[in-house]
Structures are given as structure tokens and as C-alpha cells.
Length: 192
Image 1 (tube, rainbow, N blue to C red):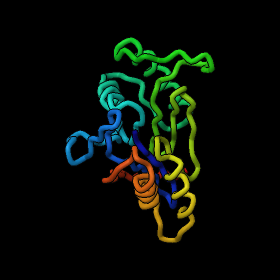
Image 2: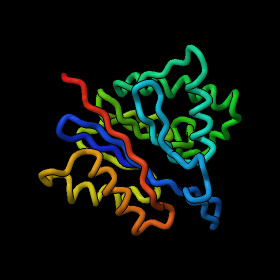
Image 3: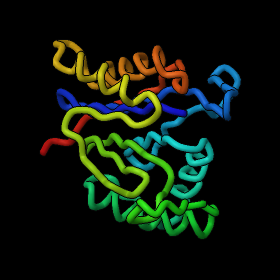
């Protein structure tokens, strides 16, 4: 279980995530797990990963490979990046893509939010790539995070990183799959 939030405001993009790992009814908090981060840096982009805890290790390993296509600056680049990743997930990492007759395409079984100098983006499990104008959240506490961001986004003096952290705080308060501490990162947006 996880909650990830991204925010774009006042020339900044931010990403925040909780640090709890759950296995069934068991909880592994940041106090016990050294590698608890759900956000990884790939080049100049920050990626927040939801889904099985193994995915953060898989993505770290995959994006550390030489000559990997890793572009996150537009929805189309993100889609192309994930199409190439999906093939490798199946071949090298033994992804069980699932077999739901309702699905039009195989699932990569993770949702990822991205913050970088070009904006805030998301790639869903079925490789739907989107760019967000203000904020978004993925994960088990996403409903709480979205509500919190909606409530405070217009407040004067509340920057992107503060809003993203607030979203995770709200999710941790009400979602049993989300827990503190919060990890966050912010970047200055490139001028258009």
C-alpha cells in the first residue's frame, strides 16, 4: 500500500510519498526498513512508485542499465518509455501481467507519478500517460490526498512541496495503507 502525490504551483513541481510497506496485515515502517523510499531519481526526474514493493527495486535496476530509453518530459515520451519497460518487465523481471478479459492491454501492475522541470505526469498500470495541470495522487490513500490538495491548493503561501506533503499527511491520517514519515522532492519548472 502506498500514497504518492504530485503538485505543480508557482513555478515549482513537487512529489511526495509515504514510507510504509505492507505485506498482508503486517506493516513495515520506515523505522525498521532502511530502503523505505518509494521515490527514485532517474536523471532529472523523480518517480514515485505504487504497487508491489518489488517494483521500486525493479525500476532502480532497469533505469540504471546503459542506453535505456528513459524520457519523462511529455506524455508521449512517457508512454514510449513504459512500452519499452513493459517488454523488459515480462522478459527479465518475470512480470505476471494478469489476464482480465476486461483489459484491452496487459497491465504493468504499477502506477507511477513523476515530477520534473517539465511538469507533473502519471503513468497508470495500463500505460495511460497523462500530464497534470495542478495536482494528482495515486495509491490506496489517493482519495484522501486528492481531497486535501483540492482544499488547500488555492491558499496563499502554500507552495507545491507543502501541498504535496499535506496530501500525504491527510492520507496517513485516514488510510491504513499509508504512514508517516513523508518523503518529498521539489524542482523548479523550466520556463515555457
